[in-house]
Image (cartoon, rainbow, N blue to C red; front, side):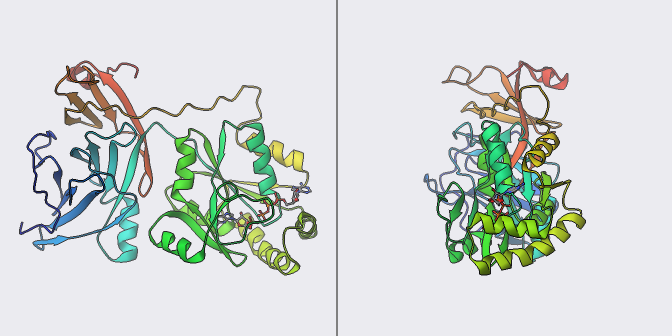
Length: 402
Ligand SMILES: Nc1ncnc2c1ncn2[C@@H]1O[C@H](COP(=O)(O)OP(=O)(O)OP(=O)(O)O)[C@@H](O)[C@H]1O
Ligand SMILES: Nc1nc2c(ncn2[C@@H]2O[C@H](COP(=O)(O)O)[C@@H](O)[C@H]2O)c(=O)[nH]1
């Protein structure tokens, strides 16, 4: 292979079994896919380092250091690597916390292919594995002053444990009562531009002369809390979200007329005359796009506020008499410290190697990866975790409730 750049660890310990015939050396794994070998390890063994990726291109006989997107996992005490679906590598990290032990390195998924095409470079992307599924986020869009914020506030007030607001970043100045971190993350353009470049945003747009954007973390934080995420974004932002991997419900709120929209903006009294004129000019194009572009699943006219709110609840399935209980967010994954890993179809079986130690379970743990959703550069959801008594249970589809 030639010499791998800087990555290889000095203190390699033959103590971690990955069960795939991979050359696992405790802090390093290598996974073959086509004519590439993905070597995953850490530069240092200290707690501040993160897992690095180097690629050995067998056809060219060369090492490549890829562009790495997404937040990188910490290495902890070693890891196993399992190739899934010929497009991503599942990383099972030993010694980490229950909510931080499963990661995915996407090496040839649609998202990664797009990024490779856009940058004309080798790209890989990390995402964190999460148990269970999140409810589809709700994207609410429409011209400034139409009543999006008002409708969202009503929803959050009536269903506080069910919905969470995605707090956007913006370069505009705060209005009177707006609080940083609650209504927006108010930031500077240079900082926001750098974060956009670093891939921290799901979408961003220049709106009425200021930069606005939804960070990946803003959406994932709501989903992690077990709530359904609501995004209040402009039409350009909605278009970008439509084009990305986030599966959402898209709602466009339209005004009954331009004169009514103007009156609402004036009555709100938060913008200068010049800003109102700018917002009204932009509203025309937004309404046209909103109604005709095919971005939106639903279009609601906010003529009468109460009626519009009832319609919004109806399309979100909240109009029935059945009480709505929020889904509890699933727990993390309590991996036994010493374990081996094997793969049976779409099931990754974790076998404790020293059942008498600590809190290690005597059961085999199964991570079912058949229904994964989402992905890089944020979270891969849909991991189903349960326990079995023996490998034959896995083959026969038997499992205990976890
Ligand atoms: N159906 C309605 N009839 C009359 N006034 C309304 C109606 N809906 C909302 N409003 C009022 O219109 C004003 C603008 O509403 P809101 O701030 O919710 O708009 P918005 O779409 O969130 O605007 P922006 O995009 O600029 O944040 C507010 O003063 C609100 O009270
Ligand atoms: N594309 C995005 N648009 C956003 C985001 N957050 C808010 N917005 C939209 O900006 C305008 C103006 O908002 P205002 O608070 O200054 O009145 C409005 O249409 C919002 O929907 C975002 O993260 N991305």
